[in-house]
Image (cartoon, rainbow, N blue to C red; front, side, top):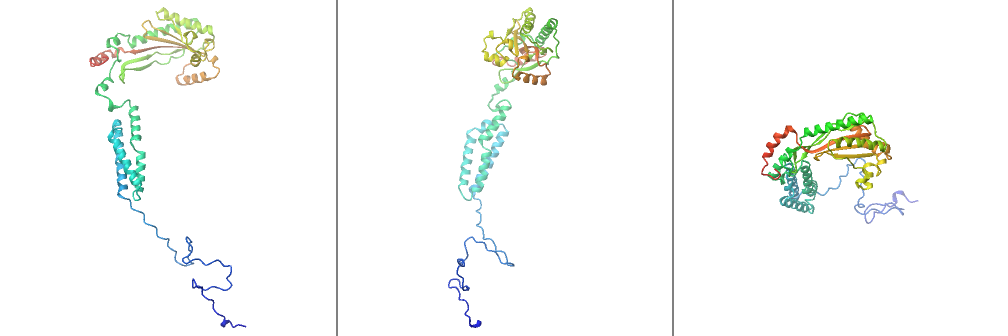
Length: 373
């Protein structure tokens, strides 16, 4: 038996100097000097943690990046100031366009350099958000909503915007026309007479009239004149009017009242005899045949052509699709007018109130030398 004390010690490995144990066949190869690349080293229990490898220092921003950021910021500030002042024309001028190109060139130069790339990215974000295109479009929209481009108007154009009359119409023609009060009185008298006849002949009752509508007349120079467009109170029957013959008789009664005051005989816009395409009749009146139309519309004018009257009838019994009823329901909810029946309204344009005649003459005297004065 071999003495344990005489057994030879393990021989060191020739490459690593480490001792190895006999009968190690099949064991994995020893790692290369320094260990495998990327392998994590786990500290032994109780040992100090292994510090992470040092990171490469980040480059400090270069001068080009700071210049690009400053230029884009100053240019954005200039655009905002121009927008605040309403200088829409200046935004599209040569100066702003040249500055825009210069700022873009600086941003590109910063992006292609390592030390300027970070600040160049911030500069690019500013340029994309605030540039001649975006701010200019916003300024143009804002200026248009306010009613014009103040920077492009001459002093004469601004004066003409306040013209009290209508372009191309002489002051004496305006003053010689019936006043708003006279037209209103005529409409009220005729409407009362028509309602009285229809009540006597057909037993109609009348809903509360819709209020009259007064709107300023445009003066032809981009502003509003002292004249108005007049829509009378709307008289409406509480009862629907059904049946072709009954509708025709009601319209004839209205025509009789008007022609007795020398008004023109009424014209049936909804009649095929007027020459309208059947598709148009169907679109506006529900059918090309008056016997199945949802709406009738008749029209007449005063002898001088100044005042018009509209008589319309709505008969929802011919509404096969329900579209007309939906529209009438909306009108009823908005104004309270009956869903069906007859409505009568008078209309006139370019009317001057008697209370404004003196002011009109005074203001018109200031425009004697201007076109249309």
